[in-house]
Amino acid sequence: MLIYGNTPKDIMKMMWRRKIKLLSITVVIAVVVMLTGTAKADPQTVINNITSVPGKLHNHIQMEIAKTKEFQKESWAKSKIQFANLKKLFIKE
Image: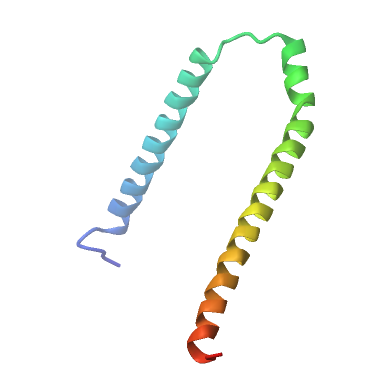
């Protein structure tokens, strides 16, 4: 089967080159990360950061709930005003 004039052998070569390129890029990135990521962290600091995550997550969720409730309250107030104005158009008292 020919695809744009390429033989299956040519297609396999192109696929192999792509795999090699991807592998080499991955290796280069991994080496750079290993060489630049040599910062030494205090184990106690790491433990404190990890143990504080549940509290931070809880606080974040509570703040988002409060923001959502406030937004919904404002939206309902606006929709009530819009509905009252629409009602006035159709029902003349």
